[in-house]
Length: 256
Image (cartoon, rainbow, N blue to C red; front, top):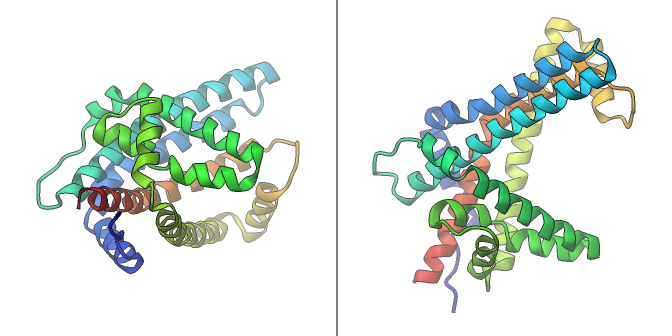
């Protein structure tokens, strides 16, 4: 019979403690999410007066470059957090090589996971939610146990067997916490920027960012990308830490 998972309170507190303890080293890696946002911002700003074909080429190139940066950063950061959580007393350093080694396997597993969840959502919302939880540790299976392709998805599903509701609840609580931190931080950043460029412009920017409009505003898109990059650099490590703690708790429950 599967053993109980890490209690929610302990998950939140221990994850937060790890986030603070490793904040500097995590930020040294995650700051590259901001770099990818700068690439997007630069392309939007430079291409705004170009012909449509020029804009398309520059922006697509920037998106590809940003995607490469983000995937490499995500693999490297997740690997580091996995090793730190497995043995906090052991001195560990980030491995840039793992980011290169697992770049394409990571991309493949991410695509397979997305397709599976989208397939579930196409049938109905509930199957999509069920599959999103079932396959949520496919990437961690790839990085920590070198399970690749469909094997990573199957291994994640097997790990969660008997713990679906426990994983769902813990993921929901930690996700809401990270989401609130991101929302508050984004609001603070908007207010700070507004103090320099005017709150009226920030209001117009916020209106544009939430509106359903076909009129592009490269500068607004760029500012939004920069703010997202700053917030992501700070809080993506926390989201990964919570995911890793649930993952290792699942593994312990299987081995006990």
